[in-house]
Image (tube, rainbow, N blue to C red):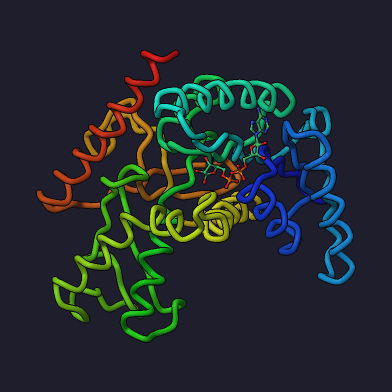
Length: 310
Ligand code: APR
């Protein structure tokens, strides 16, 4: 029998995540959305693609949570985009309530699942899901760092004209303007990029990585990135389902690591069947540490805003 992954929110990120999970034949998928008929339609379409894509994963679409019972993983992409005239606070409040409700419903059906949060603002939404699920911290994980480092890797590969497979990149911190790419730990075939590019060029790539989400939004005009975000989410799910013990940058709840307490923030973690099996602490230079603390302060500010809105 296949393992089961529930994807909540069948929009661009959710549906593409379901597609990638099924086509890699990692698990059966339950796709949940509030929009009537939409998750059912997308699921059926994916099932009808299966004979051509040659996989036997089953995808079920639904507007309720019963079918999600006993899931190994719950992936949350639900939310609404900002509408004209809507303030940022209104948007955060609406998405916070959506996150609270869907997490509680899903956690009730799958008390042993591992939750992967994708909805933005990511680090703050992790706090909401952590509280609403009541799950231990190793089973609530945010997707951000893999996406940010994949963007950095794509830019490094384009700049140096080398295979993306030769690239490795490290990004810490919150998922936003204050993210902390670490060029010293970013390599091409094991060689630090600091040996391969000028400091000025690296800074330009780092800057593009920081603004990576916005670059896609301004090109698409409506909506935000979903191909790379779904790939990043599926890499996490695969590491968990296959108990790979893979070290990946994810948003994790810190209790003293990196001098940060009571906050979700992006750090390298070991992902396996238990979720976060270890938080990897690497030595940072003074300036890297200062950038990480600044990023943590930005996340803390957002979490405090959420508390005021709650
Ligand atoms: N329950 C279930 N689904 C919901 C709910 C709810 N309470 N509220 C909204 N949704 C669904 C919407 O109906 C929509 O189909 O969430 C889906 C979101 O899909 P899109 O609007 O296409 O957004 P998407 O591009 O997929 O992004 C989702 O991921 O990367 C982040 O910033 C992004 O927070 C956003 C999220």
